[in-house]
Image (cartoon, rainbow, N blue to C red):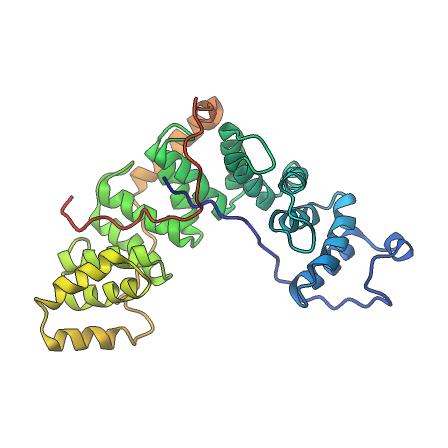
Length: 333
């Protein structure tokens, strides 16, 4: 079992020009500096010269004043040992402080710590709870993580409808892996009626975003004419993109297609690869509304009952943080 468990590290787009006589933390300067100013100084050193040690000093000062963004970033530095000793316990403490203030990035990372047992005891129910908290705030990474827990059913009870709901939320926010999983769920009829057209739409969005598994799947749709017109040239182009990124299924399909395509078609596929977009016309975000309504109803029931937060008897296997579940074998469903 492999989950996409990503660390959130999201920064606001800032153009900051700060004028201080000294950029080093000092007691006199700290007295006249707000937590926000101190945080911005930390961001300056974090981004530009990548002086993590000095950034940590400013983040620590702002974190002590209760500034959640600084708590989160200082936790991140401790998690990866950037400018400070690597310390999961300290990172977990800081993530928790920021999460308790409702900071979504910290909620996501705290959930991951509970899931992996980093700096905290493994607690699947707490992982689900904190992923849910971040997901409800619109954090796309947390939405993907939560959706995978429901999809696989080893940490939370398997529920394809709830998995679909959260994948869809993240997909509409532009998360390629969520778009790829919606394609798979429509293709297999998991939590929604089987719909090759919708499967192809979502695969196309993820493929355009550069997800190799979705590129391979979209090539397969084009090869078979499922959800899109049958088109060996487009199939060859998508398989080529996916194969160049290491997708073995796509490489195998290229070998098969070469045996039935003409040299002219193969040249056309090569020309197509040189265009900015392989999609003509572009896809849109239409999704089955009955399926969405059913998922929304189930989500509301689950939120009020908390039944899906029950901790299973076993936490299951550890999570690698690498996802390779998207490509389905090229066989008819």
